[in-house]
Image 1 (tube, rainbow, N blue to C red):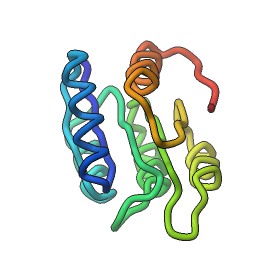
Image 2 (image 1 turned 90 degrees about the horizontal axis):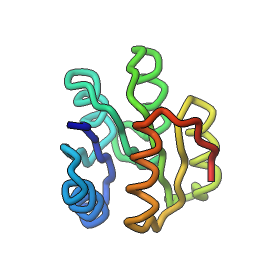
Image 3 (image 1 turned 135 degrees about the horizontal axis):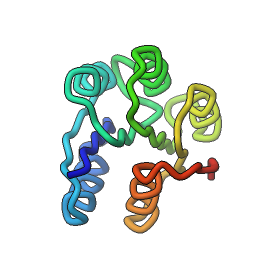
Image 4 (image 1 turned 60 degrees about the vertical axis):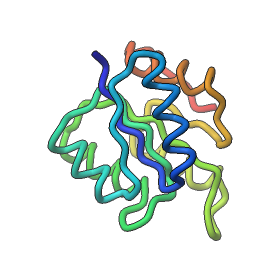
Length: 129
């Protein structure tokens, strides 16, 4: 079964993504903060990590850099709607510089999320949206 980590500081967004993914047959774990997401991903490898670019404690870009430095072979989908003083396009551009498989702008609908996870997990080369 495909293991997916959903890291987003917004409880309702994280819960919604997890529900959609569970309904689609994925095994899902959640993290509200970047440090928790990093710890989970380093100790319990995931096939796909969906990571908000703006997270508390450790931001998404730092988590991406550390996962790649640790040679974690998970597929990473960066998502952002922006944050305080950080437009979404800037957050996603920074995430893209460190090896994400896909970038999605929030709000993300069910179809786009499930398609991104399926494509990332299948290993297809993906272009940033």
